[in-house]
Length: 358
Image 1: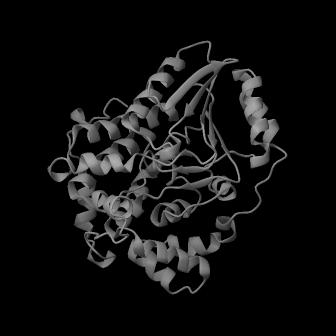
Image 2 (image 1 turned 90 degrees about the vertical axis):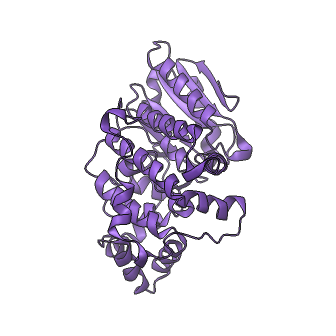
């Protein structure tokens, strides 16, 4: 097991604790492999009736994939190619699929930062998931900010958010809190921070098979209130239902409201190409099952590293920290339909796709 993934079984509940606090539990390849191994082991273990994934720190469940690793190995060979990079995304997406179809209750304590790859290990499928947020929750799919796109199944769960909410989250990459997570359908329960210790005691005291019902009862008295997205829902639908990124940004530009201008400012700093790819990804994902969404995302990852957009984004925001990425193309107006279509061209024949067995 990875030194950053701690496991124990108590009272027929398998506990997974992510313990890489200095990196906000960003996922390494070793961590992905450890998570996969323990979930496969517990899947057929009759002594484990439920699984809880949590963090050793209140700062974050998981801030995403290890983007410094992406930059290092992506620059190691021409056109962003690396066996380790290929392994990471193939195995991470296979882990997301495993979690989505897990046959036992899968309880994610979404305390603190839950972004990108953290969403991939927290969302699960409707048959297993129990997703709990708190007033410390900071949730986002911020990939367009680093020149990537909402992956780890984002093409599936964002495209199924009500109305244009998934488009808003995917194209702006902005962070939301507990109330918004519940409103969008990306969380199930709210528990305030001052009741978090009591929740942890409950999880360890109640037998695993009874946990979902016990959590329902425990969380019932708590209410996160109304969030920003609910208050601004009409604004979001007015702008983000438009047919292209250019049209969305033009619509936002004509609205002098604070919310619209904040969304526009965020989009103006994002990768123009990857925003356009993201919109197409969500349009396609709405008609696909989880496995096909993950296979599509796997294709896009390969194309993205070949192009180099994410390498430039990570360089500018994380490595050099000049916050001045040189996006290619530089503007939305320069993005052509052919550029977007090229990202969806499969790099492998169907029989050789790395996720063909999902």
